[in-house]
Amino acid sequence: MEVVNSVRKTIWFNIGFFAVTTVLGVIGWPLYAWHHGVSGAELALFVFYVWATGLGITVGYHRLFAHTTYKANPVIRFLLLFFGAAAFEQTALDWASQHRDHHRYVDTDMDPYSIKKGFFYAHIGWLIFWKHKIHYENALDLQKDPMVMHQHKNYLLWCAGAGIVTPVLIGACFGHALGAFLLAVCLRITFVYHSTFCINSVCHMFGKSTYDVNATAKDHWLVALVTFGEGYHNFHHKFPVDYRNGIRWFDFDPSKWLIRGMAFLGLVHELKRTSKFRILEARLAGEKASTSHLLQGFAMQPFVAKPLEQLQAQYVLVRQRLEGWEDAVRNYRVLVKEQMAAHSEEIKLAAGQKIREAHEHFQQAYGQWRELISLPPLQLQLSLSAIPA
Image (cartoon, rainbow, N blue to C red):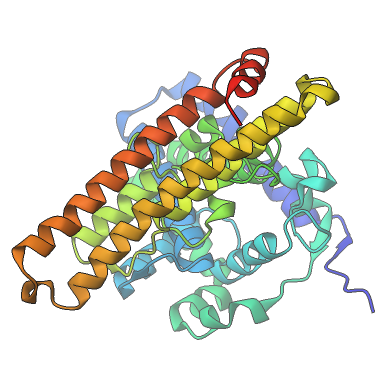
């Protein structure tokens, strides 16, 4: 029997909510500002609520509750549930359950916001023209959390209190209740909504496929800027249980920085990180696949066989160097587990030297690999053809 995950149905409440908040935020607030001006307190409240609710979704709903990439103490869990509710993106249980389905059934009919159904559907259509069945059995861990379930059962109180009443009361303290409502509630909700929605639409249609060339999920730097680091979506789909999305030091990922900062203060713990060797392995495989496609699309069929063979040989070489480096690190860790202090200083130094040498060998091979795959198609084909068999 075929499983029906969603049915076509116009969700008038969602349409009305999106329409009202958008009109009041995009049109109402500029009119208000034209007649009454804009205070620093209003702008500060808007910026604070954009960041607080955005991070409530990314750090809370996504990386903590949906993927359990780290563990947090009750105070942090409450704050993330509070500001997550203020984003008006469903309860943490609903959000996490549907997101887990997205990863499990990505790009199929069981995916709640599949890009295969079109850009509009993935962006917002799935929320206003479709009714989805939520499979709570995939979130039994969250159903055991009393705080998550309290938010789920009393969602209207949580979202109205956190997302409307609190910012308006803060605005009223500065004499700007209406301005706070239009700016820190309506315009902020609209901005955070569409920023979040871009992950499902833009990041599944545009960008780079660094780690998995076959995935629709892509890395998009601009989306990362407006979603506090969530735009590195190709990496995330390849390694969903990593608490980071942007793994390079210069990647804009405030969600990662906040989680790491809270860990430093002892507020969260057990941060999950993917091994750098698995990341490099995936990156190499992605580079090899992209370069193979490039060669196959550029070169005439009779002349592409040797370049492809040489590309494979170079790929095998750099993979072997990576494995050698990993083996050296693994052997060192075995020594540590066996109480390295009991071994001679000579053995310690030798183990460390092997890691450095293996790392240098990998860096050398990877540098050559990067130079090779960065060549223009014709030059790449000629260079590969010139490599001795």
